[in-house]
Structures are given as structure tokens and as C-alpha cells.
Image (cartoon, rainbow, N blue to C red; front, side):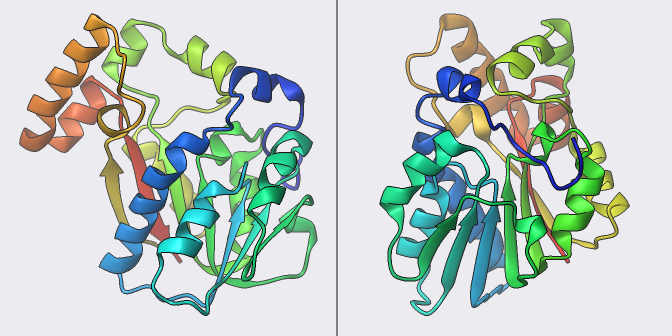
Length: 235
């Protein structure tokens, strides 16, 4: 796979994730809006690479106060494109093509839970970052003492196609190593706030520990229990 190839293009991902994680999109949009507002980011053009079913952009289209922002979504997976077409509207368009093969440039690029799926992830990030002035990344933090203890990497590789695994330090280093400046970052509480209904007794106990540790020491909670992601604003 080259830097211009990305994400999952076959039906296996759709089989494992039939909704393409649409149910998580409002929460992810909230995290994006938070870091935009915190840094007074006011883009006029926003693009998402690997946009899946397009619901994150649809949420931002509805919720950002500036009604002049133009949104574009790029996705190469045919199954995802079928889902996103229904969301197309004024100021929100989708393309089943590789953004990296175009000469377009935007104010803000979103890469939300994407580059952990890409073989040459550094080359991909480096090339994609040239398509926009500002970039927002959301990165699952799969590495923790807990994930190592239960060998969770096998699960995330099979169920959601993660080829690479990160903690906070390696995630931020990846952005910097691609030639970008990290402007701001924050943990996002994935396990505590997303799809946490109908959990097993064991998973509820893990979340109980996360709620105790996180207010005391965020790094400790992420590095020991896991269940967190990182949102990063870069330039």
C-alpha cells in the first residue's frame, strides 16, 4: 500500500461494522467542535479524508454556527460511499476518490480514526497534511497495560482493522515526525462516553476504575486502563 492508498476498501469491514460507526459520529463531532472553539478555529472550507458514511461532516454541517462553511468528504471504500450519498446537501458534498490525487487545498482537514488503518501511515499523513492549513486528528490509543495484559491488539486488528497501535507519546510523535506542529491536544473518553450501554460486568468495573483514575491523573488512566483516544490540532 502506498501513501495514496488508505482505509478499508472491501466488504469485510462493512460485515464487521455494518453501520460504519455512524452511531459514534455525533460524539466525534462534539470533540472536533470543542478543540475548534478552544483554539478559535474558523475555517471556511473543511475536508474529511476517509469520511466513512459521512455522518461526522453531516453533524458539523448542522451544528457549526457559520452557515457559509463548505464541507467535503473523500472516501475510497465503495460500501461507505453508498451510505454517504444520502447525506449530500447544500455545502456538503462527497467524493468516491482519493483526496491525495487531487490538487485541492482546504482550510481544515479532518482525519478521524483513519491512519491507524494505513500501511505507510507516516507517508500518508505527510502527504495528506499538505492538503490543508490546519489538521485535526482523532487517534485511538490502543496501547495500555490493560490491553497488553489481555492481548487486545488481536481483537482491534480483526474487528476494526487497526494495523498500528499508539499511546499518547507515539501519537504526538507521529504528527511531529510527519513535519507538522502540534498546536493543541486532549484526551477523549471513548470507553466512558461511546457505546457504553449493555456492558458486561467486567467492562463496567473497568469503566468504574477509569472514572476514578482519570480525574486524578489522565496519563496514568490512559496508560494503565486504556479506553481513551487523542484529538490533536496541528498545523
